Image 1 (cartoon, rainbow, N blue to C red):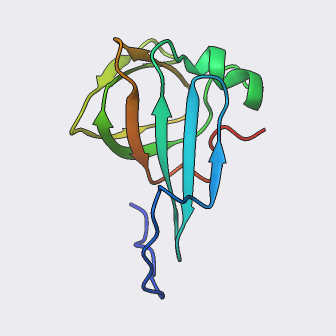
Image 2 (image 1 turned 90 degrees about the vertical axis):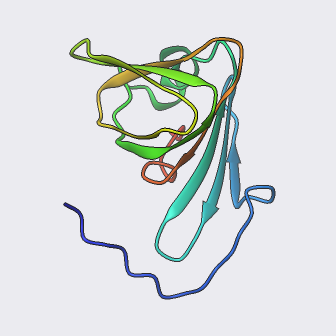
Image 3 (image 1 turned 90 degrees about the horizontal axis):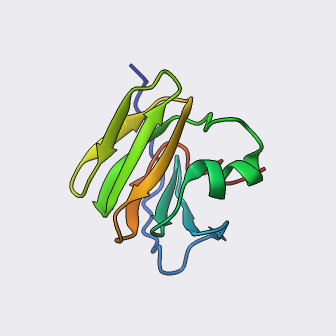
Length: 124
């Protein structure tokens, strides 16, 4: 288990005015940097698929980041390299290890708050 983060500063920031925004195809990642961590609000549009929208940016065969977060809306299917598949939906917290592809299911955008990989997500 990871050691807890040490928070030293009291901060409040909004994803309406993020520190950084990344916008690969069908993707919007709003980055807010706080004292001890980076929080991302991820929005993937219908038709989004990691292997089509993010792979060209990061140039790996599958996503090599670990993810931890909370799904706000929409549905995201995730398939691990070993074939294991799960779907993340609204109100669910999740962890996903490296080695996966993912895609939006249905016609609603998938929106999630990401607390583990936001600093590196969708960057070369």
